[in-house]
Length: 136
Length: 384
Image (cartoon, rainbow over all chains, first blue to last red; front, side, top):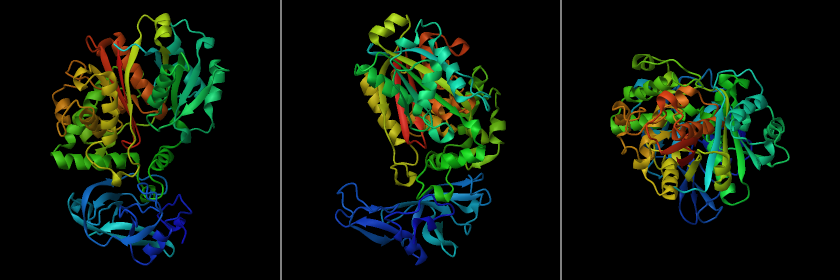
């Protein structure tokens, strides 16, 4: 799949990390790990700036992580007018990566608390559009 | 005092919601205020630096157009960009070129005419200032980015939304005294606390507003500065740094680490510390940004920023006056024009020309101007 199939609004068509979207389709949210130095990356990268290697492995983010911070957006930008209000959060995972994403509406806005445990899961927006989100 | 490169002229237009003039006419107004009284003719000016965020302009490559309108051709004109800190990036480039001996006198003009876009379109443009692959597709905005810092800060230090609002109380007090400010209303704590929530915990009055405007800073070598003005304001230190564009990969959610880096460089170059600063302009695009700036610039320890404004230490007669021109919160924030406006305020303070907001005896001033969500900070220290 193209990277254009990612997100409510997409700004990028092609990318070396486009298989990320295929993994979402398979129900997995993946980070990348440099085969040479072992550093893990999210957002996933095709290239490691430290050892200049492009030998990357896809690794799944399966664990629950801790919510570091969040905000509820009441006024969305163009393309998000009808989606607002929505909440964004940053979660730190034991896999050694942090993820910024929407907190899914399964959590009431009033129940969102810093430190709460959340997982990152694929979100199917339509037949061929995917994203990922945070949920308990 | 290090006498190498000086600011010899500053100017700005009023910042307004809709300026009603073209970009070239806007820039001319700022330029005229800066050169007035300097006995400087176009042939004396060696280069023109233009700073703005190009995505707001229909005009592509405005540098030559503005050069033409100001009568500065054939001197070289070029463009710099670092979103909201483009103006101080322009000052930094001008400083460097003069110090290197490439040019003697450089005019820097920062501008933005944001009224060309609707608020929502402007928000979308700003959202694309985040990683367009992994952040923008979630509907990120500038207020959302700063709100993530605000939420983490309030949680970590037990600070309150009222404490954030007190930054706006102060800046609205000074905005009312600044004839160039867009927002001149004095706001009460209640009005701020009761305003609409934009991105929790930030409310409408915790946020600065888009504006139209231009600013101009003229810099010169020591010899030329002394020829053209009896009140040169010297550039003592310039610091800059860049943070990761993705907020999630940064080392802190409660401090803008890049500002700390930029400040360290600027203080070291000037041979000064935070205790030596008499007056400061900081990038208060949101109330939380001013609190973080207090701490990242060393005016307060981590977690103690709110106390500075509560104790009125950042009012013009306090220990470390900050944004006594109303700040971005009350002046308005025409992206490319903001840095030059901050420099103008510091220069006027150091020249003793700040009227009723004058900080008595101010000798050393600092401007912190930040592009994005803590992404491109410039810290510049000035002295007389």
